[in-house]
Length: 119
Length: 496
Image (cartoon, rainbow over all chains, first blue to last red; front, side):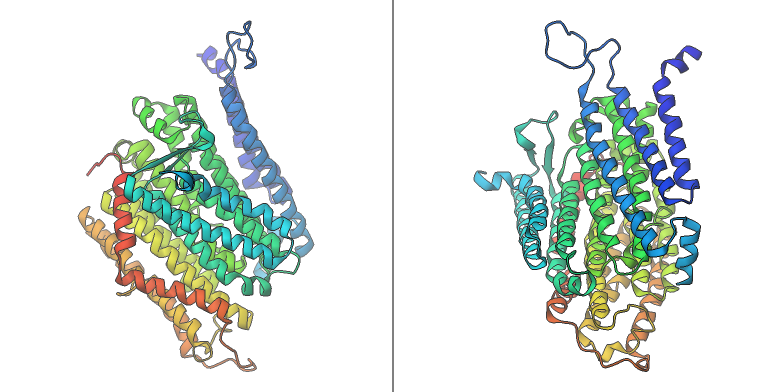
């Protein structure tokens, strides 16, 4: 039982990171912290993909007569795309935070809600 | 097929994609608009060509870059997505005709060519989601369209546009990431990302926990993107504070494309038997759909900002579409697709008409719009046509959707659902009436100068969309026949 739990340690890390990120997004009022949470949430999915492509004892997928067992490169390539998407999302989110700060003078969600309700 | 005709599936996405950097290079608003407009016209022609080819030859498969499926990315066009491609590209073209005057009024000089660049990217993303036959490719295009629409929404004039965009960014990213988790789990179990291949491999392992989890993640992620109640919280502010052109385009297309992906995954990839018989998707979709119909319409009644009113009405209309999906019969899916088409038409017409009003009086609040009926008669005619279509008054497109939806509910033996659809339409009568009352029966507010009719470049596309609402209420062949044939293609196994 314990062996089985430990054997899947990569999934446990993924789940813990995923929930941590999700919790930060929901619970924090600071918009930058929300973005940090969103990043952790996305990173957990990157780890899910990357660790699923690993083959025990496998090498990097290089065409060489000595290499018989190699890791599956496809999930790694897929996640490169997702990482780019994540970077773009973070950049856009931070740009919005800057604009929000210029327009409202704050980046705390509860203060923003108050100012929006008054208007 | 030879020459260009064989490459239409790739051109469908590549042409608008190339328009985006060209806009950036153009640097001037007029030139950028021309580039996107030409690209959008070409996309519409391509979509029409593809619809014709699927009609002639059945399903088309296009290996992108010559890499054969299931290893390479495959574009698959059948009647179902040809229908969506046609809707998205046609709405985009009409909205772009309308755009220059509206964009000049609402977006600061120096940013306008960037606006068109984002618009082209958003169009690319939406078309890409619809055309691709590869699960991971859906995610990539989903993010292309989402990222560009966050930027488009943030360009709205009011500072609330920024917070609305941020909220949408957070919720949209969570939705897309859920979808990504689902696709990852499916890949883990099947070793493939090609939709046709997935469809063949899932039945053998469909009871395994990762597949069940994948199904849940994909459904919830797409429901978030499609703004199904209670995951609709991002929608009202996003639509209300976006520039008018963006509201018209996104309200008519973005959520619809997500619903199409939901249909594709539920009925084609996982199969209706798995989703509706082994798993309780029927209730999982039906209950939120019914609540959305009532809660959306009910919230719409209390809005004083008409754009927000229409945004809440969108939440309710998405409820009707999902209701059709939840019925899980060919008639239900056809009704959902018909309403996807008709709701696109009505919301585009209504948001364009509101854009015309905003162009003249600088506000879309009910009290500011009082008495406009006499001063802007043509815009109001479009608003009335769109409003009646929203209600489902006979001789409008909206009536056709409701008709097929009610017929599908009867066929499933759910007569109480028919009652609920009719009752919730009554709520729509209330808010549309409030709008008409303000426009025609309220006195002009004091101190408002005489208002002229909107400029022709905005009025004509608005009237075109309004006329489409009436035309497709009379001649229903195109949407109904395409939707019915699409429904039979999407549903790979009948369960009723």
